Length: 311
Image 1 (cartoon, rainbow, N blue to C red):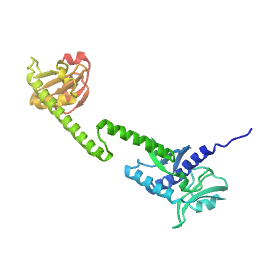
Image 2: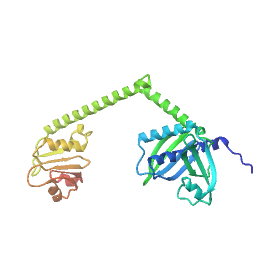
Image 3: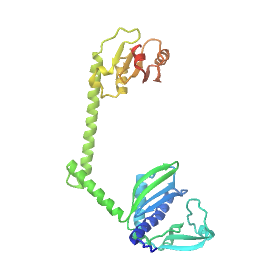
Image 4: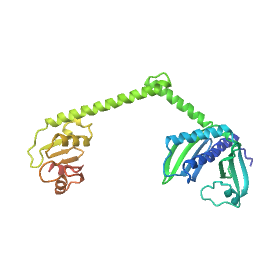
């Protein structure tokens, strides 16, 4: 059988593979005790798992990408050398995965010859580009936690980085068209203005809901009940359906000071507000087999219809 090597695919994998070595070296600057847990290399894309107790910050990601780009631009030579495992370890070569190595190993080195500084030195039998310039570009596109103390970085090399730039540029111009700005320089101002308008609208809605809630509470008449001065049946008021139940409870507690109030909705969420007398919310709940979270004056939970209607 005659095998044909796909040179284009091989070169793409070599770019990504060499980039994993450089990425590992940069991660070691931030996490000195880290080590590779797993990696996958495809055509100008890679995933790299490493040990760390936290995620990278946005600033650290920017620093890694900037440093990587500088290394690629300086065109450092990638060299390989076979030597004994003992010699390799003595040269500070990184060994992956806690693997068992043969007596003879292959060391892949990337060195800044101008200052005689090792950029990356690792044991590896994989294929690599001849120099960092051939990687072209590097971009981190995602980070995630995949296990306890294990983080994963997904990244791209050239030409996928260029494809990503075109994709993001297209998305940016679509956003600009949708929000009505003609240049990128106007985008941030428009965004800040839109966010402020959104915040102002949210505050207005909250203010209106509070006013409406207070007006509703004022309209409730006192029931003939041995324990409760007020009973608020939320579903009786259609305009309260969009208000969070906890907000209704808090407003009711403040509005009916020094009164005992029962609040419930047909979802059978309920709240006992016990602000007068000698019985606390917790004691009253225990007497009527109600469960929930409580303080001395408030118990909130969920119960069945029959129990609530018998209170």
